[in-house]
Amino acid sequence: MRNFRYIFWFFHCICGLTSLTSYADGGPKDRPINAVAPDTTQNPSFDSSAVNVRQFDQASLDSYKERTDFQYNEQQVDLSWWQRFKQWLRYKIAELMSREGSYALLKNIGIIAGVGALLYLVMKLLGMDAAGIFSRKSHTANTKSTVHTENIHDIDFTAELQKTIETGNYRLAVRLLYLDCLKKLNDSGLIRWQPAKTNIAYVNELDDAILQSEFKKLTRQFEYIWYGDFSINHQHFIQLHAAFQQFDEGLK
Amino acid sequence: MEEQHFEQRIDLSGLTGAIQQIRELLATVIVGQQQMVDLLIAGILADGHILIEGVPGVAKTLSAKLIAQSIDAKFSRIQFTPDLMPSDVLGTSVFNPKENGFSFKPGPIFGHLILVDEINRSPAKTQAALFEVMEERQVTLDGHTYPMEEPFVVLATQNPIEQEGTYRLPEAQLDRFLFKIEVGYPSLEEEIQILAHHHAQKLDERIASIKPILRTADIRNYRKTVKGLHIEDKLLDFIARIVHETRNHKSIYLGASPRASLAIANSAKAIAVMDDRDFITPDDVIRVAPAVLRHRLILTPEREMEGLTTDDVVSQIIKGIAVPR
Image 1 (cartoon, rainbow over the protein chains, first blue to last red):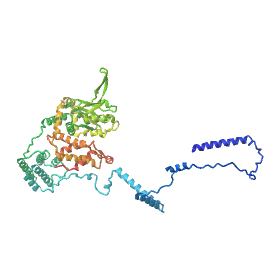
Image 2 (cartoon, rainbow over the protein chains, first blue to last red):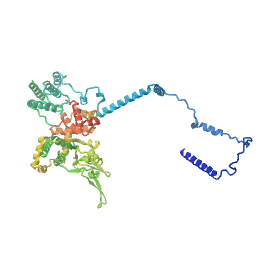
Image 3 (cartoon, each protein chain N blue to C red):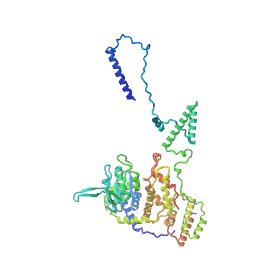
């Protein structure tokens, strides 16, 4: 388009120059400068040549009409409920925005959104937990025991021990003896029971050297039987039971 | 109380004796650092590679060299530098005019105990050369696969402080190390002892006097022994829960892979052997968990900015899981 404009301007200049040249040469040669042009309005001349009327080719027109490119009538499409809902929503929003004071409302929403985004950014930078803003829990306190564990204070050791001995399950009986021992140590304030503490941690928690040594031996026996899957017969269990009872006596 | 002695189901006498000898030998040269020495031995027994990280001058390289000296095996040292090329590590094919063909010239990686000193001083290209050999124990070059002889252990050292001229190890590379052992400064008493040793000028003599205690065949046999140790289902569950928790913890961006679970189980077995037991306890698991997990976890940027370390998070996770009893 721009090129056409230049071409037109170029021809325009050429024509202008030509007319200027002709004026420079003394103007049109057939008429003197002072001559008056003849009045043609009194005797107008008419073009009397025959008119050749041409018609559009109907077949070509029909073929063009067949083509979808030249069909400009839009067909009405049935809108789905979702499209109708969107249309309605757009209309309502446009109506709301056109009302007086809508600009102020829009401005307030923008400010609220901006403040919210800024707060979120600050929280992310400080590493704050969004859920933790309204609670007093610290991050480290969030790590809770994920393994279901028995509460040693809820076990009836005497009854459970009796049952396991009767069934001859000495391995489980040793486990109950050991848990009962931990409960008694906790009750006497010598250790602090926590499900995540290991047996060695409890051993190291005991200040009394003799008690520690005795408890270490019991722990070793428990570990060989419970974690090492070593078999234990009735005779061995009787000895071990006596050792646990002796240790309990020492705590009193 | 008279303690009942349980008969071991696996004969561990030879292995525990050798471990004790190595510990004593190393203790004559290295003051303190018992935890590092134990993890080095456990790592070798568990068929793993070990990354030792510590500031300069805390006996990282010396420890690795001494461990290598205590084993009668092919030892090679590769000093990782910024201009080191993969072919300098793995080897290359050279033209042999006599035979009118190319022959493979193995690189220093072909050995039993490989000390990769200052591993983070080489760019990713050279570090990536270790991927296949560390995981699959083989080197593939020019269409040929060259298997490594067992034992094959990479002992790598790195300095955590320097930034200039160092390249952070990619996660895939870190995951191939069984342990990342962090070596700290010695205590005051230990430092006095180090000075006394140095003053006595007997350090070189002591180092020279270290004779091999284990042969490669022994290590191969002991590794089989370690693999055969008993592990209770409740302890497998305990290990899995620890690793699983790393994938759900708020402070962790990238958790540990199943390779980490296997690494904990294998190395806990090695630790149990060192305590003369043929079964593992929760204490063994807790002892190795930080060394296995610390380099496999990536903290979220917020926690990292707060100064939290992966060790802190591992400790939190362990404290949150009940010990199976």
